[in-house]
Image (tube, rainbow, N blue to C red; front, side, top):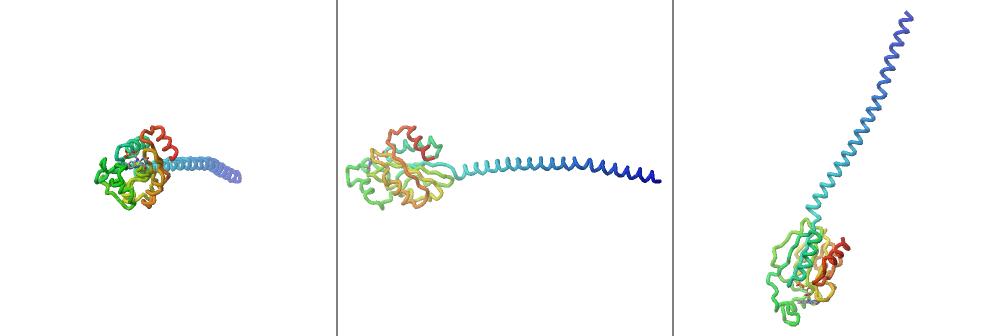
Amino acid sequence: MKKIMSLLTTLTLVICLAGCGSSAPAVESSETTTSDSQITDASEKESESASTSATESDTEIETGSKTLVVYFSATGTTKGIAESIADITGADLYEITAAVPYTDDDRDWTNSDSRCSIEQNDTSVRPEIGSETISLEGYSTVYIGYPIWFAQEPRIMDTFVESYDFTGITVIPFCTSGSSGIGQSGQDLADNAGSGNWIEGMRFAGDALEDEIKEWIDSIA
Ligand SMILES: Cc1cc2nc3c(=O)[nH]c(=O)nc-3n(C[C@H](O)[C@H](O)[C@H](O)COP(=O)(O)O)c2cc1C
């Protein structure tokens, strides 16, 4: 009987040990599995978050990171620079035209009674814009170009900046001229706009090369 009892005890012990022995690697493997699956989850999360941020940035590109080049050009000089900026930056272009176009006589700076002379002598004049309005939604950067008229921005540029809300937009003025610099015009436009993050602008000669324009763009990017 004693022998039978001892045999049964030994058998129970063997079964128990065998059970415990097999459960240890199972936990390990389960830990490995868990940790593997955590790594997978983390990498999934990583790729999820990567794809989420890619999606978010894609959305950003669609909704808030476009560039627009706005310009007014009476004789085509500023237009040429505006087109180069748009080419280089991949921006959209928008031309400001006057509801009543400027004639050669209007632009006669030698005549103090010409339309331009009269308008530029009165900072409160706001010539009407003829081009259709544009939505600035989706644009994070707006270049604004114009010719220098009597060392200032043409008054129609004041009409433009006062008609739009530039909140959240980086606004970059540029101009063309015979020889004058951009002077106070960028600051005057910023003051009249009353919104937007305006940065110091740049004056170009009409024959400015694309390399010079690109260098400037790169310097402010
Ligand atoms: C009414 C008027 C006033 C101007 N005043 C100046 C000036 O003060 N300084 C200057 O360097 N050029 C002056 N210019 C020359 C223009 O700024 C220059 O020709 C400009 O590049 C023209 O650009 P647009 O062809 O885009 O109109 C003036 C031109 C006009 C028509």
